[in-house]
Amino acid sequence: MVFSGYVPQPGDPRVPLMELFSAAKWAPILRHAQGRPFAWVDDCIPPRLVRRSVLRADRLLLPVDPAQGLQREHVERLLRRPPSRAWPNPWAC
Image 1 (cartoon, rainbow, N blue to C red):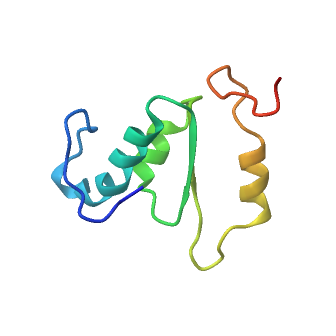
Image 2: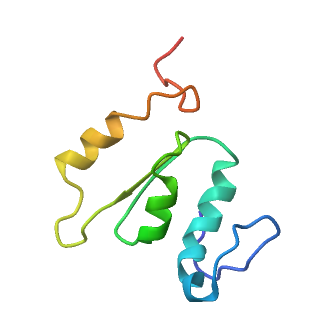
């Protein structure tokens, strides 16, 4: 997925001018997911996006402190995916 040289495309989420930097990652992630469930682990996820996504069963936004990096609690949170039909079970036959 390419984040540099971001050019807004039709269907991108509307982002206030002050938050255009966050759109450089957010819009391509949403485009790539194409409505499928996803997790985004990053050290630079705008708190507004985390708050807006907390009740969404199809996405998990997991901010990571860059000074500490990925911790055990982050991995445990990823393994406890939202219990929703929107999040497919990769081990189901």
